[in-house]
Image (cartoon, rainbow, N blue to C red; front, side):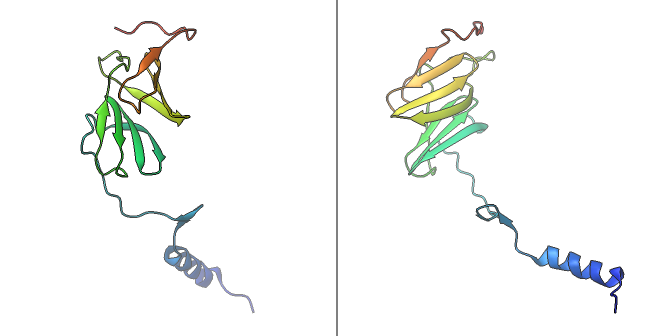
Length: 130
């Protein structure tokens, strides 16, 4: 005997609504806690995590946390200014003990955990930002 779609559709929708939601690698988080103590700017554009160390690229410097993101220290020395005189970080990467920042003024590289950076625009064709 055929079952009417009027009966099956509500059952199917109920099953979908009651089914647990999972991301590709596990449950979808439903509770978030925001940690920003020590960040000069709370607009974070990029994050890199290595063990308990969290690097947060913000619109005004690099935040580094060594306690899993509970607190941050913001570093800006040597990061090129953007057009609005901020140390804006668009992206970041960490490899071989160095931190690489993509900024409006070029690439900035740190060899000392982010305390200081050396900026480079060489060969990039990026104009000077004022």
